[in-house]
Amino acid sequence: MRVETNLREVALEDVVSAAKLVEDLGFDGLAQSEVRRDPFISLTLAATATNSIRLAPAVAIVFPRSPMIVAYMSHNLQVLSKGRFALGMGTQVKGHIQRRFSTEWGSPGPRLREYILALRAIWDCWQHDTPLNFTGDFYQFTLMTPEFNLGPTEHYPIPIQIGAVNKYLIRTAGELCDGLRVHSFSTPEYIRDVIWPNVLIGAKKAGRPLDSFEMIGGGFTATGADEQAVTEAREWVRHRIAWYASTRTYLPVLEHHGWEAINPELRKLIEQKRWDDMKKLVTDEMLDTFCVSGTYDQIADAARKRIEGLTDTLSFPLPFDATERREQLEPAVASLKQLKGADEWRAKAASGIPA
Image 1 (cartoon, rainbow, N blue to C red):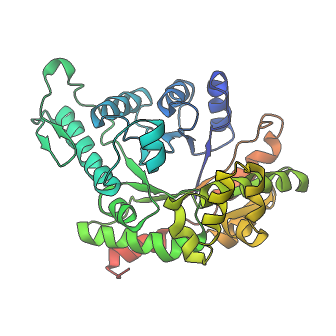
Image 2 (image 1 turned 90 degrees about the vertical axis):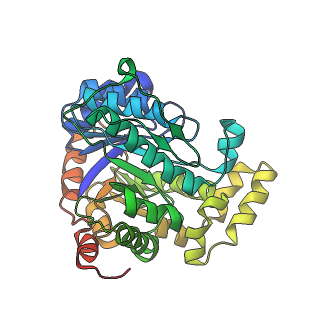
């Protein structure tokens, strides 16, 4: 099992020191959410401060950006990091794309699929000096003069990972991508019953093996040095679950567990601006289903019981006092890395077992 962490709560001016610490603690990867800042900026800083860990947006919101812009940024980061970059990208939801980014929304699944194909066409043009002639339903790229051609890199190709909740995009990941970034608002049951079977359908459609395909993430992790810290982390997760459960995009996960009725109730609270009341609707049963919990010395066993064999990479939250907790964090990360990945699911693709 690979273990990565996210710098979501780390201030921009602290990214360099945090990235060094993450690598020293034994993490395999460092991710950056696109919440309050551009993830490519944080990852550029991290690339200059590290030598071995993988760097990825988790995930970059790509529709407000042209595929050409993302192609340049990804190529630059891949060269800067000497091949340690992976492009994690996603669609966001309609309200944010239209009202926060003022960007066109429509056919998000087919649009993201075409986005992937456009990126690959641009990178192929630079790598192999092939003519750029990509014409799709949403994007057209037909001009690349020598002045703007980045040329080949020894670190090719650039891995693409997408965030996916619905079946169309899950299958797209299996068909076209190097990995799938499981949304935090997911459960082991949803990964087993919905995500992996549909990844296999996508792979079968493309007629490709999944030998190097990576399943990344697997719900929330609430951990800490002691029980009080774990309790506080669980309440933060309860709050996050309430927010995601209020969004229609994530209804498939709720429906899989028979909890879809919570969505309209949460939306009513949002309309009434009763923000603090939202998490009260998230029961302990829901919290335990979405969240792996335990102190640093318990978390590996807790993850083994819930998620082992379903995913290849787990996300482990970096605490604000990570430097002081080093003696506890290092063995916790090392123990998680001993868990088994999703080899059995990849074997199903190789053997042609239907999803």
